[in-house]
Amino acid sequence: MARSDSFTKQTKYRDQLKEFLGLANIADRTSGNTPSYGYAAAHAHKAYNDDSFLSIAQNVWNVGRTYTLSSSDVNAGSIGVKNFPIQKQCLDAQANTQATMAGGTFLYTRTEDPQIAAISTGSFFVLSSLLAEVTLNSTYRDAAIDSMQFIQSHLYFKEGLVRDGISARQNDSCGTIDFINPYNSGLAIEGMSILASVTQDSSSQKTYPLWQNADGVIAAWYDRGDENIVRGLSAVYERNGASSFRSYVEAYLAVQYHAVVDQAAGSNVYGTSWIGPPTTTFDGAGQTSGVTVLTAAIPLTQSSSGGGSSNGGNCGSNGQSRSSATSAGAIAGAAVGGGALVGLVGTVAFLCLRRQERRERKRQLGRPTPFHDTNTTSTDTKSPIPPATIESLPDTQSRPVSRSALTTMTPGAPVAPSVVHSSHASESGRNGDEISNAELYRLLSERLESGRWDTHISLPPYPWSSQEGSVRSGAVPQAR
Image (cartoon, rainbow, N blue to C red; front, top):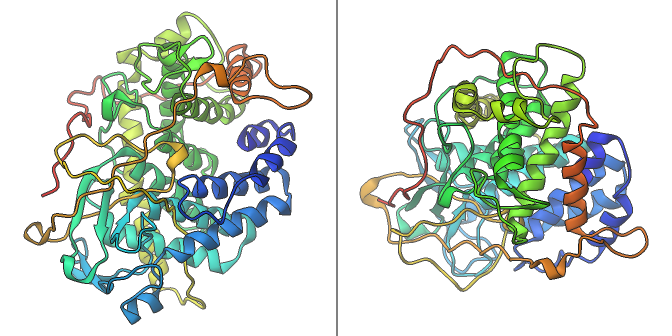
């Protein structure tokens, strides 16, 4: 809602957001929604320049900081919210040196749970970066750098991929969880692109296929789309000037938009799979991922209005031009371009981090985490683990050290996204000025579909005629 207002330069949803966030119990540290409250509030502050939203985001950050290891925690070998000794260092396989565990955010609030996850650390990383961007406060900037450093040293796998997690308990031999989920890299990309705009560090990127089908449409676990990758790439797009790399991002996001509208939408209801078939059952997770893609398409239409070639799909059009934009031939190059963005995780951010390490740091701060508590833990590492949704943004995961040193620790089972039945989301909306989520999704979808942004998205030319062997995460990498 806030991002939609920001892109369209309106304040339509400001009062509703203020009301909704006012109902949030930020002090409830077992709530999986807490990091999402901070994320929403930070974007609301950016959109409306309203300090009441900033205060909410900062309060959420403070909660997350409690579950994030600081340098003083690591030096002391303990943290107040856990009942076990902390592992002070683990091997950074990239640098072949021991690296501090400072900057990692615990996934669960249970005092005995040692897992630091990519989704929790990544969520805190994004929130810290957003607060650094809007406040220019070095406290948030340094916290973001610490999170990035942790991801680089302990969760970075290869080719820009980010592992699920690592144990911070002293006698667990730095055991890692080697599952590779798209949302982990999505959060890292988003945090790094925001932080790079704050620190003004340059970046580089690689190209390789990932998490998509032959048409370039994101299809991860159970053929689900992933809104975190879209959010991360959207952050890259918003904060980078004109370049061929930015054009790849634009094309890739346009592909996801067309896929959601053409293949995941059943009337005003969106499914979790962007490759279809469409659904007619209202599902909160599907609606959230769908509206994320629709919102990410808004700046694409705005930036394209200034002209340029139109040899690609039209984001606001119907019919053949939209269908052709999602054909395998037209999208082969975009799929490669999208992979290049994910490679940003292994390059842009990590290069920024390397540079930042050499700079003098005036203050060292704690950090906030995505934290949620659950008594359900996965014990079967051979079963696919569905990705977290935007609702459970508070989970992250990590990286390997020594294959022989891995413990039997298994990742906690992600919180299943809640399903909201259509009876709870009347399309007629609410009384007065209020608007239901279903109505919001419908209005945004209609606005994009009706072509009110009369612009075109041009797929850039690609030197690759086809892309074979696109990697799909249809099988879960086993923790070794």
